Image 1 (tube, helix red, strand yellow):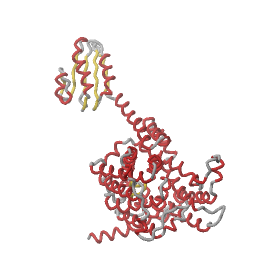
Image 2: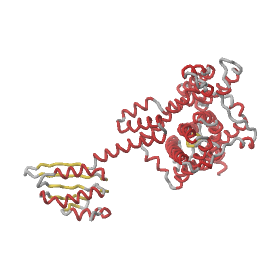
Image 3: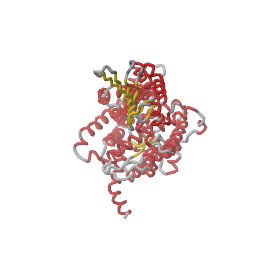
Image 4: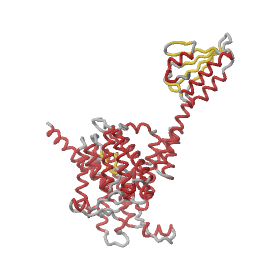
Length: 521
């Protein structure tokens, strides 16, 4: 029975894996390019994300690999840490952090970040990708520019006409494929635009070889090591610098990788589950364990950080993938391609990959998103925009922290305003009746407005304290209420407390009964 089920799924999963493979090739290379690491590293993480993470993960249709969202972190971290080998150590440690998060069942972590901050994070990453890919788009090689040259002259003199032409045509292919052709027939969704752009780039490189003006220099082409067997492949691995494990900066980068990779994985898993036609749910903690193991292994042999990624996952679903077999097979196809066609991969212009990444960056930072967030109001827009500014001007972790400060700030302001409601009833008999209805949770930040209300009460007031809906009163709030109850007789104020148990004329005993864990003595 199981064999029948396996072959039945293989009929749909193998074609889907081929499509995902063709989507993954340009993305693995492009993300490595955006990250400033050897392009081979992107392929390593793609293989591990497919085979290793695919085997361990509980996601049925999710596909893992190098993520564009981490490119900015990688680029900045390598500079700050001083070497790629030291960065690989941070990847290993980040994987350990993820593994621990999964084992301690922290898969719910994604729910505790405001959506405005998460959107700001993705938008900021998109803007950084766009900024970093413009030089590759025009074939600009800054390493060949003399230090004494003026920037404007140097930039113009180093632009490659051939690389720029290829990039512009590739961009046109990507946009036309997505906006027009993909809506015409299913074949155009099975064969993805990035693959067509890459094939065009290879053909252009082949026929323009030797051309001085329209040709593409070797420095502007993909460069992955040529390996014809497994031993040759293994010789190209890069290993972590474990001697840097005592550096504080390494641990900070590791924590950043773990946090952002976990968030991106959990958000992608949520989106993938919604796209899944069978509506299966990914076990979040197991997914973190799988990603953690994948990142440990990726860091150990020279790969990029791995997450579950929405582009490859959605391509898998659209292509009919039903089980994680498609993700695993796509990883093996990547491995086979690295060993069998490295020469063909080395004919891909970097400007083609840049055009693919520019589209990815634009999708992350669409102008319409800024308008949408603005229309949602300042409580959504301010954390969103400050996260973006923080990421672009400082770094990703600081940007997220700045956005969280504004997001939490609005929560505290709302809590400050909504701790209680005061109702005043001036009866015909001249009695001043007041009712203060407390919220479900009242904390120390509500101390000042509540104290202000109590102090404003006139003499001979009739006060009702309504705690029917209240589950928690902070010690500070209990303290000011108890202090007031001890002094209310001086102003001839009569106090009644309304609870679900009834009305009490002796509030001090009431608080000892309802909130025994918060006694003030």
